Image (cartoon, rainbow, N blue to C red; front, side):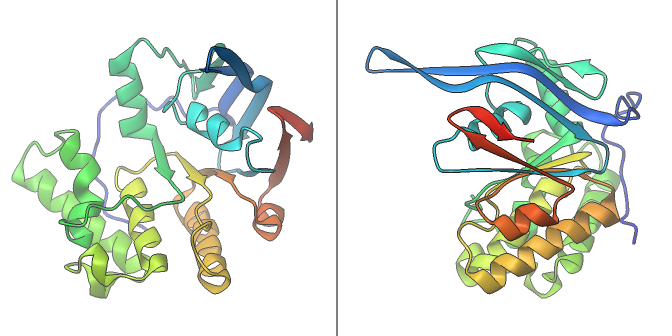
Length: 246
């Protein structure tokens, strides 16, 4: 399978190395009611090209915090992260935006679709926010890719529907298409099946693995579902902000 593609920028591809993410000594502390809460304690993490890694553990273990840091949505208190050949500089907003725009996609437990936008408009929203449309030709190409993604995800008949008209599973699939519209190298998924029933959760899980294979993605997923975790290439367990086992 191949999708129509369009060039996001002309920078050289820094994602040719086998290891696509490397995190070292990640610490994250929060301050609540005058006290310091240690959420992550000296975490190391790596993700290889086209590898799938599950992060498991009890609620409050620090899983989602780590995923958000890896996805550059949150700055660690200390430690460093390298994505491709680039060491993440959280003070360089332009470089952060470039990484997110070019290389990173994220799916949350909640779909966060805009109710006043159609399915197709929601999928195109990241490009719209980033002022990507530079010409009618680029817009046409982007719309074609969005439609192809939605057809691939079984939503070709829902292009002009609105979120209120969709099931929970359909909303999550729209969120997946939105995360993939800019052709990222890495997909982060934070409890993507958490709000779905068992049947729809299983369908979404298998769809994620099919997407990973067909698009050559690296996948990092936070999940409580042990069966989901066991289907990944590796599964890591977190407890109280530390790795419990490798």
